[in-house]
Image (cartoon, rainbow, N blue to C red; front, side, top):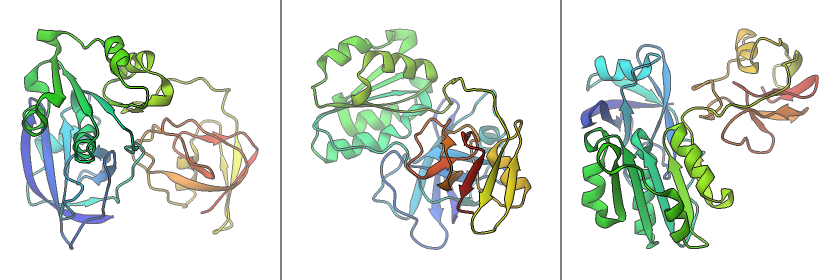
Length: 302
C-alpha cells in the first residue's frame, strides 16, 4: 500500500466528485491508462476506482466517485464525510483494461464509466492515432469531465445527453470503424450489452463495474492446500475460497468480492480452478472471491 494525502475534492458533475491524492512519502507507483487502485477508506471499507489523471504525474493520483443512491458505504462516505488533509492508503495500480496498440480507436463511455477512458483518449491522441470518444449520459450536468474533454480534444469528443439527443447509433459507428480499429467501452450494463451486440468481440474491450450473470453447477466442497504454510483449508459448499482462507488465518486482500477488480488474485500450483470472474485470470492464477475448484484438491502458493 502507498500512503497518500487527500489534497483536493472537486465537484465534476451533479452527484460526482474527483479526488486528488498526493503521495505522502515521495513519488507514487507508475501506472498506464485503464489502471485502477484500491482506496482504503477510514470507515474500514476498501473500494476500487479507475485512475483518471495524467500517467506522467508521479506525485498524485486522480479518481472520480459518483454518489450511488444504493451505496454500500463507500461512495456515501466519500461524498458526505471525507475531507481534504485526510491520510488514505492506496494500493499499487492494477490494470485489467489495458490500452493495446491500434491504428484507430473508438472509445464509448457511459456516465462514471468515463474515468478509465479519460487517460486512454489522451494516450491515443498523443500516439498520433485517430481517436473518437462517444460519451453518453442523461444530461450534460451529470457527465463528469465533459467540459475538460471537449476543451482538450475538441471535435474528437461527441457528447450524447440522452434527454436531449437520444442514444448513439452503435450500428452506424460499427460500420465506419476501420478493420484494424479497436473499441474500448466502460459504462452501465445496458450499454455494455448493446456494445457487445454491435461490435465484433475480437475488436472490443470492455470494463464492467458489475459482474455478468453466469450459470454454474451446484457448488461442492473441496480442499485448498497452502504450500508455504502447510495448512489445509476446507472450503464448504456455502462459502467462498476467500472467506475460507481468511477464516483459517491465511489473509488474502480483497475488494469488490464480485470478480471484477482482481485484488484477491492468488497463485494456483496444482488442481483445476473453476474461473467465475469477469476479467479473465491469467494462467496459474485465480480470483478467489468468486472462483472455485473443479478438482477435490487445489494447491495454492500461500
